[in-house]
Image (cartoon, rainbow, N blue to C red; front, side, top):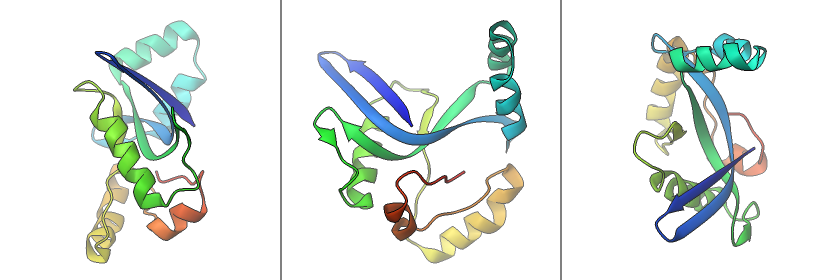
Length: 136
């Protein structure tokens, strides 16, 4: 779980989101690179981060300043999460995981994205039941 603290002009939003930090090297998600950074000294971690910045891939919002939103339907939470991500500065390392309701598109993603290090695809009904599920 991660907290996004976003200040835009007079608006101040704090959101608690669910996601995963990933490092992409040569077009592939590298969990090894993320783990190496986490296990490194602060100085080495900064060097690794400069060479291969991490992304935070998010798939759910759990709380907003108005309170806990976990009891809301996933589709509503996704819309709220997309609103939070859309308000981040351009080039933000925080990105929303792609989503589709088209089974064929999901099948193509499942069959093709494993080559880039993505480990799976979740269906919304499953996500709604598992608030802390892992997408990547």
